[in-house]
Length: 383
Image 1: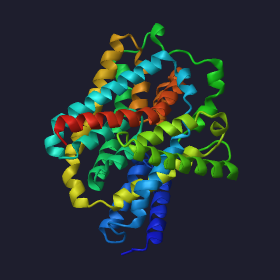
Image 2 (image 1 turned 30 degrees about the vertical axis):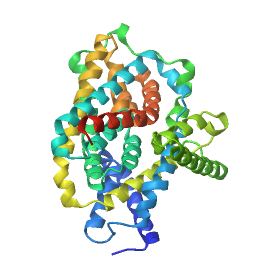
Image 3 (image 1 turned 45 degrees about the vertical axis):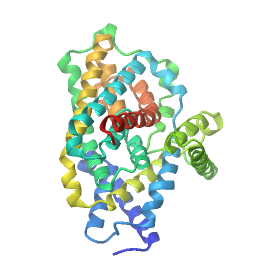
Image 4 (image 1 turned 180 degrees about the vertical axis):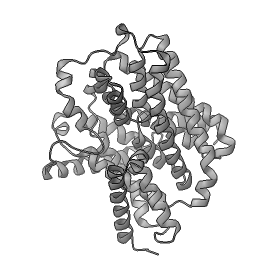
């Protein structure tokens, strides 16, 4: 068994590289996503005795590593782009976030007996990830100290349910009736359409412009500084979790024009998060994961199902069109990439940029909502 921390890091780097390559080249792994593939590979290598169950490498990734990754990803959030999304998309996204919170609380109350004492932590993670994407899931889970087995099982459930919800959102507008012409999404401005490449650049997987060494140096300095500042503030005001201090600091800094011009932040950040997730897989035990899997899967289904009822039910009551609701729902559940995919697949060209904008916004608001739901559930369950 490997025990040297440097060698463990090397193996995790290889795991992430393989996971990314499989996601890009093989259809079945593309549907699973690099995050889940990395977790599963780490899980297998640990349980066959190749990787250790505990290592200083894992501890680093659970702390500073993932925090720096979160900071780098949040540096890609441009709050001005949210204004371009328009009131209808923002309203739909907000309704969806409320539906997610209601679903996470309801599911927690229904399944707490089967999920166990960490239900309140999972409630926060599901509320976070289903209002903005997987980055929130990792951030909240790390801060709350969710056990590795529960974390891995919840990640698997999240991937499956997110994929199923994409299929549902493709079908729902057809089943409920095509949007009327008067109900179509708000048209994007000419400037917004010409800014599409710049908007789509801010994804987790690629950067259209070449990343300069000076940009990389600046990003690392800013991210490390933000993590340090968040640690200091959390020690002074411990009532607010460190990751919320980090989220707030980075969101403020990210609006500075000179920092907006830096390239590569989301790509570097996503890589660190993938390393963290692979290390979580390596810390998991297959037998325990299988045991906790089914109730966690039921919990994820319940959360997303209630989200769907709320966003499409209440959304139609306030006369929001089905296209906007479907794209906003994908921005909630799967993040910006899912909103983009649904818009393209269904031909909702006018909803594409607004959907991406609110999906990126979800990276920020998901952390706040997740911790609020976790605190509420902890009080309700007496955790």
